[in-house]
Every structure is written in structure tokens, then in C-alpha cells.
Image (cartoon, rainbow over all chains, first blue to last red; front, side, top):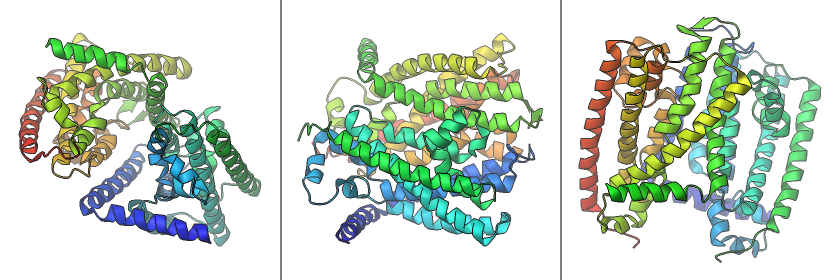
Length: 259
Length: 266
């Protein structure tokens, strides 16, 4: 409960900081909306030249992209502080987090929620629900599976971000780690089935991005067996456990340089 | 000229300090390539010809995107100009007998050379892995047109990029400036994911009025023979006009910005 109150305070501060500059809010919301709209238009237009893509219809491909954005945006909303973590390690600012009597991940993982992504999330939630109910044939159980796998995807996203935090401590001079993660996830804007083996398995099971970003939409379309759903939950639990282990391991490499 | 050659040489050496960083930056470009490649490969599984493109045409286009983007869009200036204006570091260069904009352009060129070398190696490796059909320019005019349009694209991109960063003169807390919107437009409208001539004629006409298609799409369209004959000359003239207009506009914004610059933070 104490941790939740602290997180709320961090989030409140972070939101106020961003909202204090309306020009920034306007530019970034316009940019983010434009990015999604242009890619949606492209996907829609692509089907003027083909009838299906890896066996998926236009509506299914669009839904894959919308559900990708839902998880991706929620991840950015919650874990935005990871983007600033590199500087904290380089300057030794992490000291001030480690000495506080709360778990450091509350600060370095969840401490800088991004209100811009909250605005985008509301728009995306509406759009995805409307598109899913209008164009994807699904029963109530499929929707429940979809929601459960979205949450499961968020757990994997959290694990991936914790891994990045750990790697940032160990490889202090590398400043592209979070962007590499972003580029890896961006590969899943299209269904993982479009990739050939062994890349497909690598993206699905080794880096469980396929489970995180493609499986929810597949579950809604009824293309995921119950055993695959159970495997997804096992993978996310395993990813979270390993990431927390790796976080503690990486802290041994923190030298508090420049502090 | 000699001082800029020195800047080029120093920057070239600097790039080898953080080698892992650079390799990972190149990895990012390959990851982006993979999505586009497999998307189009998926389209051609059940089609021989899509939007007037054969599979060989399209996959050559996708491979050339990796090379042209490495040449045109790699620019360390984009990560630094806004921040230097915002935190006052710009003053360090202003007091030196060197042009700030030429200084960053020289550093960009150094970065482009290294990125281009790596891009060629990446394309070779990817070609050996995927074995796609690859199309080379049909004649010397296409090859020359490709090279000239790439050179013009480098200039246009630098100026568009600088212009979008100069907003930091007026809004210092926004070091990204308008460049976020520019980046978003660039993703789709430059032709990095798909060739722009697959769009309806009206959309193509509107996009042609922006600087984006001159950066990636037109050079590659010339390379793969989608644009031929006098049309190549027309595109090169349009690119040159864009370059001159952007140069004038950037100079104007730069001088206006300097008048409001207060070197805050120094």
C-alpha cells in the first residue's frame, strides 16, 4: 500500500511536469496519432494489391496492429522512466534511489509515467474495442482470453524493461538498449507468422515478444489453443522471475561512478 | 576548408571510441529492414505482381532502403543541435572561427561514410542469407541519377532536420522541437516502408510537394528503373530547387534564432 502511494505521487509529479508545457503535449500527441494513422492507412492500402497476408485478412492485420499499439503504449506509459535510467547510472544518481527504504524498481521502472501515452491509450482502447467488436468475429471467452493475454503481455513488457535496466548498469557506455527493444517490438507490428524460422521462434519464445504482442490478437481470433495460452502465462512468469534475478545480479556491477 | 577536413578526421576517429554503441545502432537499422522485408515477402507469397512491382523490383527496393537511409538519414546533428541551443553549449562554437551549421554538416558526413560502409556489409550478409533477386541499374543514366539524387537528398535532409531543431531557440525546453513530427512523417512518407508510387495519384502528388520523397523514394526509384529518361532530370531539378529553398529558409530561421538566443545555462 505504501509503495502504491509512492507510485501515485511519482506519477502525479510526472504528469504535472509534462502537462505544464502545452506545446510539447500538442506536438507529441499529434506525432503519435499521425504515426498510428499513417501506418493504418498503409496497411489498409496494402490490401488493394493482395487478398491476404500470411493467411490473414485485412481486418485481422489491422487488429494485430491495434493490439500491438495497445500493449506498446501501455508499456511506454508505465515504464517511461527506463528511458532516463542511463543518465542516472552515468551520473551516479542511482545512489539516491538505492538508499531509500522502498524497492528501487518503483522509482527506476515505474517512477516516470507518461501522461501523453495515457491520452493515446484512451484513444487506442476505444479504437481497438470498436474495431474488434465490429470486424472480428469473437465470443465472450475469446474477449476474456484477449484481456488476460494483454495483461500477460504487460508482465512480459515489465520483465523486458527490467532486463534493460540491468543491462544498462552492466554496459554503461551503450545508450541504445531501450531503442533496440523498441525496434524489436516494432517488428511485431505485423504478425510473427510473417517471419521465417528460426527468426519466428526467436521472436516468439526466446525474446517472448510474439507472446507479448501477437498472442492476444490471435486469442481473440480463436487461433490460439488453450495449451498455448497456458504456455504464455508460464513464459511471462518465467520472464519476470529471471528479470528480477538479473536485476539483483546487475546491481553488483554498479560502481556509483561520478556520484 | 582545411578546418572542416580536420573536424571530419577527428569525428571519424571519435566514432571508433564507442564501438559497441555503433554496432548496436547498426543492428537497429537491420531490425527495421527485417520488418519491411518480411512484410513484402509475405505479400508476394500469393502474388506475382503487386502495384506494378515484381518481387525482384520490390525486394531490391527494400534492400536499397537500407543503404540510402544509412547514407541520407544518419546524422548525429539531429541528436545534438536542439540540446546545445537549449543548454547554452552553442556559445562554445559561436565564439570560434567556424560556422556552426557547416561544423555539424561535416560531422554528419563523417557519420554517413561509416554508416554507408557498414550498410554495404549488412546488405551483403543479408543477401547471402535470403538470396533475393536483386536488380541493378539498367543504364549509366540511372546510376548517375541515383548518385546525384542521393547527394541532393543528404543536403535536403540536413536542412529539414536543422530547421526542425531550431525551434529550441524559442522553446528551449523542447529540444526535440518539431523533429518528432518530422521523424513520424519520414517513417512513412519518405518511402522507407513502401514505394510511394503504389499510392493513388492524388496522394503521390501531395507527398511530392513535401521534402520527404526526395530523401529515400526518388533516389531508389531511379536506381531500380521506375523513373527513367527525362523524368530523372526533372526529379533532380525538383530536388535542387527544394535544396535551395530549404537553404534560404534555414539561414533565415538561424539568424532570427540567434537574435533571441540568450545562452541560458552557461
